[in-house]
Amino acid sequence: MLFLTIQELEAAINYWRTQSPSCGDELHLCAEASALAKPYALMIVQGSQRIPLDVLDNTAQLAIQDYLKASQAK
Image 1 (cartoon, one colour):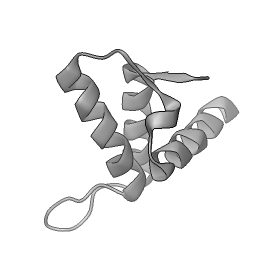
Image 2: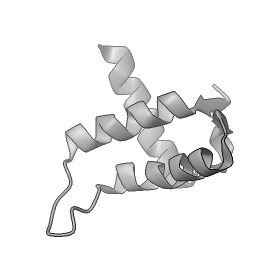
Image 3: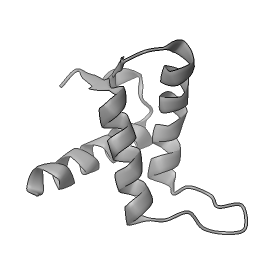
């Protein structure tokens, strides 16, 4: 997989939000969801439907890899 669709990115964010719900008075996202939320927001603003995986930072890439492993195990 060289590209990630906006739908896949949204699903990964939702996965991480269920794995580690927001916490604190400010409702901070977990590190994985936060790392994925940044490119997701950019995609929405730019009207993009997919993003190259290699532009994601290391935390976001690991979050996607772990999400994909978990979703394939179902």
